[in-house]
Length: 247
Image (cartoon, rainbow, N blue to C red; front, side):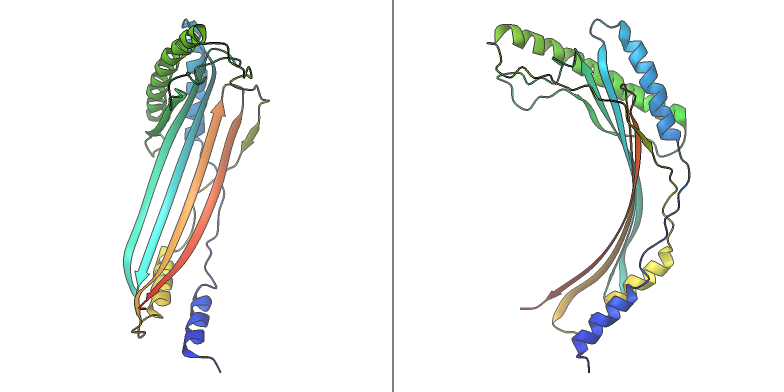
């Protein structure tokens, strides 16, 4: 015979039994196309500058998130959100010495590029390219300015003991996963978390009882001037059960 608490736990586990959505795969390449076009344009365009970049990398992280939370049988959170963020890694100088070299006497100043730039969520390649171009131009100006500081610092400071290069040259790597959005039944999940959290009703010692469902589809795309092209798809499903009782 099961105790009341054991029965409740078994009921929760049963409700979680059909928990995981199916993942489908397909194609979506507007971001990748825009990155490749801007990478080519930027490396050619900046080649005429006094200090042209020797390395340029673009990284885009796109996240689609669905969160459903229920407490004591009632939905309290039901949200869906998307974001797309660009990081630019710009290096001028050479593999041996570039703008990322620490400046002696100055802390926490790397000058590698532009981070956390918001991008539009649509598939308009030209709109994406505009954002990438602006971020790249900003990253180049910052990198070139800092590289001049690095050169000045090298002249006035004593010779460094560490003579290792600022960056190693790597072989091009290509790995591109095809993707489609997550497919799962939000209505079913609303019912599921409501049912799970309703198990806590009737326990006066429980003052907080929640069941949460979170589905994330994270797509990470990276291209660089060495020829690497990588797109990795990370589907993630999380289920949380949180209970707080009186002491």
